[in-house]
Image (cartoon, rainbow, N blue to C red; front, side, top):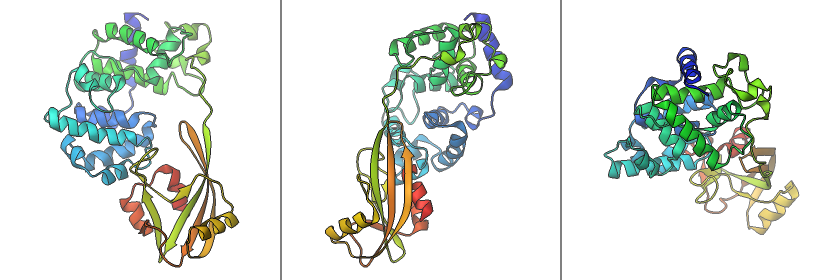
Length: 341
């Protein structure tokens, strides 16, 4: 890859870039929010959340002061809720130590909660126009094909070498366009799923994988462990038109609200026996059917039931459906159950 190739890429980006809301600002706070939202999330999904989030929390100070419940409600459906919790931790540190401003120094950015090398590079190059590259999965895929790299893309040494290559090039171009040109190319041309659109690619002349018709063999990644499957039974207790929820205090999805559940698959007769053993007084059980939710590392296979209570059971919150939708962050794993109710 030579300087002329990079020039072709940057010119291609300037002419063909998508019109995305976070590309209309140099505000480091707004760019930071967009980059965190975009991690492992589709651009089209992020667009909706980005506008609403910034309307509710327009500054670092607003983010630092927001309640956890309100924050996670704004994040509801985006998944990977630790991202939102780290946003708030980082905002609190920015208010405490940086007068509410994201620092323009790489080392200082990397010391903040939830900010890794990619996010730091994106903030520095896009918001502050500093010659620091940002390497995400899109960039790794592009470079692995350009160099026909047989090494595992998850290897930190590979990422380090690519970073050094890009640091040499980025000094000669507008850092914001340089960073976003690689990301854009990987998102819309050198795509992750399906056949890349090589004839549209500004790097096709220097791409070794394209030259050898081996684009789909790259990037090379070590095999992932199969997802762990967890069977669950979900209890939706109903009392006087209100439904049971509880706050998850730790572990996966902590800070969000869920319906009571156990890690065991039960048929309706099993549910009756279980509730009787728990001392639950109920008049009716209705099956909502089976549901599945896929996380990055595991799958939940769920049976869900609505149980009509004769008196409240345990210290759950009993809340109306509209209030749940308005005020409580229900993760995607339980959203289909909520809709079915």
